[in-house]
Image (cartoon, rainbow, N blue to C red; front, side, top):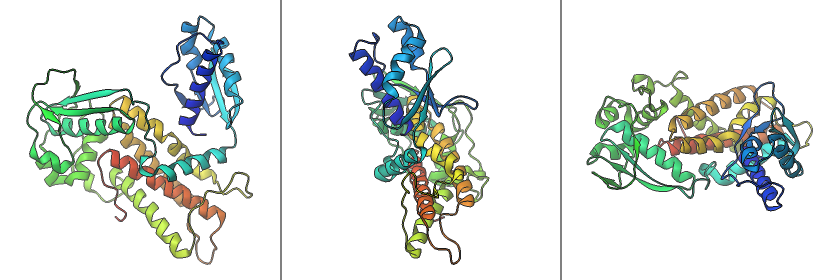
Length: 360
């Protein structure tokens, strides 16, 4: 069970409790689950009982008990505990089976992994100044929202800079518009689109414009072009290229990726893969949060974390056999994990409008 599936499971439990008249409260549009903090209980925690206690006119502990009864029997949920003033703590059943579900979802959805329809009822119009960082940010925010089912358009205060097209930016309309607008006004880049394109090219320019939070100045120096680990953009794109190279290498050795079934002994789910698998499971939630908070920088930081975890996993658990070693279930599972990481990286870069080359 992925975090997104667990969130839907808890929301379904709330709806059932309301339908059965065990709980008299409005059903929230969404339920947020988070990884348990160090020292906490279980794999994930949720504060929905505290959220519903007031409207239901019940103690939060009682609301938590009502929901626990309806979540505990769901497939994939091993244990549900009530902690503190009414938090629900979830321990998922069969971690490897959950990992298989994540890998299967990435394989099935491809670059659209993490997209959804949580914001399908929202319509937005983003309005920005005739400034390159505002234009690129507005377009990236719009991409994130559309990936979550929202609709809308982007507009500019004045006629757009013709060089924006080379940065992948389009504007639906410009000028004074007599409709409700959402202003996008990050700290200006201090350079024009043409200047950034000449110095950095479109991919590095977009990364530099989007990586910093909107209230921070964007780092747009030559370090964005460095072909080394100190450059986060290079590291993200190199991790993607390396994942694709592993697939080609496996084909030459005559095997393909396959996530092993839970319970196979010895288990091919290496402990070193845990951080990478967790980050991939969290990816849909990061994309949704990036859309809700108008924060493409969150996606950039997520991709950096995935790339870092990928290299740690790759170095500790090589997906390809060495020397005369024969491909095993462990290699096939590791390759499946590596391929999924490459897909997550490519999908995230695509949402930021940045290419993910197969070779670097």
